[in-house]
Each structure stands twice: as C-alpha cells, then as structure tokens.
Image 1 (cartoon, rainbow, N blue to C red):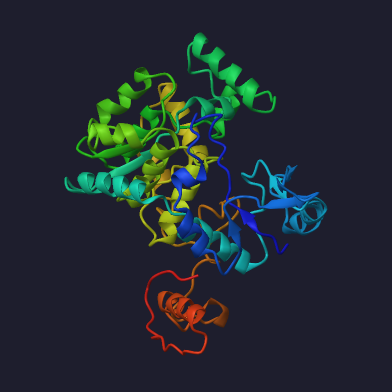
Image 2: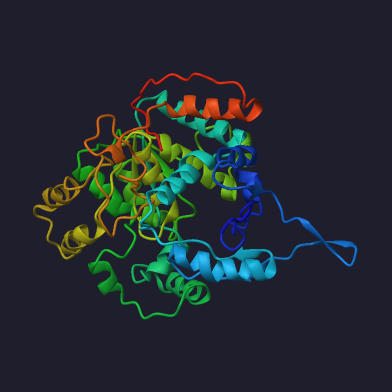
Length: 404
C-alpha cells in the first residue's frame, strides 16, 4: 500500500472507562524506532492546504471485514486511501486473516507484538517490582481468571447466576453483541463457557498443586462476587493481585484501567507458570501465551475446556469417582507451552511457530538462522545510517535466542 501509519487509537472507553490512549500505555519512541525499516509512522495526521489555509486532513472511516485477506487491503482499502488521502480503519480486532501465505508478513507481526510494542518505563518498572517481590518468596503462578461480565455475556453462560445477575448479563449482551440464541447446557457441554474459579482450583488440585501454591490473579471485577471466589480461595489461600503486592499508594495511582491490565500482562509474561481460563476470543490470554512461547517456551497450563466439560458435568451430577484422574488425563495431553507446530484452529497469536523461529542447524536453508547475530546487525544498520562510507565489521556469533 506504500502507506504511512498514524499511531493507533485504543478503544478503551466502552469497557475500561480509560482515556490513557496509546501514548499513555506504550513507549511511542521505541515503537516508531523499532519499525523504522518496515513502515513510516507518524503521531498524527498532517495538515493540508485548502485555499491557502491550513486544515487537518480528515481520514475516511472504513470498516474492514473480519479476518480480511491481504488482498482486501491492497484493493478496497487502497482505493479509498487514494480517493480520500487517509483512511481510518475501525474496528481492528481480528481484521486481518491469521494464516497468511507470506512468512515475512507473519514475522512482521512478531516484530510488532514482541519487540515494537513495549510498555512505558514506569509500567515496566512497576511490573518488575511486583515480579521481584513475588519471586523473593519463591516460585509463583499467574492465572488470567476470565470470569467477568463482558466475557460471560459474550459466551451466553448465565444460568449459574441468580435472576438479578442474569438480567444484568442479558442486558449487557443485548447492548454489545449480535443477537443469537444461546442455550447454556449446550454451550457448557462443548466447553464454550469460561471456567468458574472453583473449576480452576479443582484442575490445579488434580494436577498436584497444594494449598501452599502462590498465585497471582490477573482479573478485572469478578462477576458474582465472593461466593464464586470462596471455593477457590479455600483451595488456594495464597492469592495476590496488582493491588495487594506493592506499595498501596503507587499501585492505586498506576494500575487503574488500561494501566492495571498492562501490569497484569507483564506479570503473567514473567511468571513461572501462566494459566488462562478462557482463551477463546481473549486477546490478553492469546497474546500472553504467544509471547511466553516466543521468549523461551515458558510453561503454560492451557485447559482444554471442551474435553473437561463432560468431566465437570458428571461431577455436578454426583459422579465423583475417578474425577481427578480424568482431569489429569486431559491436562497431561497438552503442550504446556513447549515447541509445537501450529495446527488449526490454534491461533497465530498463541503460537507463531514456525514463521517467527529459526534453526541453528537446519536441513532446509529457509529455516536457517541469519549468519549474523540480530543485535549486531541492528547496530551495524544504525551506524550505516549515520555514515554510509564507513564499513562496520560485525561478529558472526550465533546465539540460542530467537531471531526473526
């Protein structure tokens, strides 16, 4: 498209009630600098001259189809951009197909997700402080407990709540999602409902985690309140979140809305073990899993809700014999964040293998790691920008780190 990218806007007001924006969360200078060889990025639309007067260029709003192919951007979107001078693509979640038959496009996704998008220094500092405090007491697990109003309403899983709560969920669904008849028992039977806190606790207990396990909870306000948390807290009393670990004043000031979610993301990324409880359309969980896999195949416990559903339904019907053994059989059949080739319907954002990985001793030359260490190569490119006439010799050391 040969287009210039304007810094993205974050749609956070509808749910987070937070207007921090992209600049309030991400390190803009790092973002622009990291992608300088891929795309030109500006912070805002430029002014144009109309009848001798300066006027802000107005972008034409365009709605991309869900999972649009690359060809849509190089035809329909490009046509509108040429016609209007600028286009504003919204919404943009899941608006580009995941499986693109061009490895370099996929690698660009990894450069953006795992290198260019870096939180602002104060968020990184606060996140590291929390992780260091948690790790000072030993290993810890981070759980993304997705048992919040928006996800429960989206999934259509309302029958376990009282009438007042069901009314709230149904109203939220009607106002925010497309109308669709959803039957709870059918949804539950195929694993379409988020795991309840108690179910999460039972899975961990079946896997051998005892009540001394230290857990960091990354979650918003849990729908249904303490009555849903009490069984989990009974099984695992050592619970923390970003509001309980560090200095109260600093955390209160820095972890509201998007900032709190950013801190949760970093703690989940750096935790010894990460467990998502609902990875369907959850961008947070998918991105953390993909990030952990990309940076060293860090241990992830990913429950197979579809396989677990009949086991939990049987338990609720009084069939408790062999429950823990059945849970273990399901759970030990997962990858635990180890290297494995992506197979549909697994998301590229969850697993960027093999496009974003290289091999030290590859049989296929296309899979071979670059001859130069990527860090040295970046240094050389930066040096050549300032003095094209000077040749810089870089080492050819190979590392076990992931290059793209």
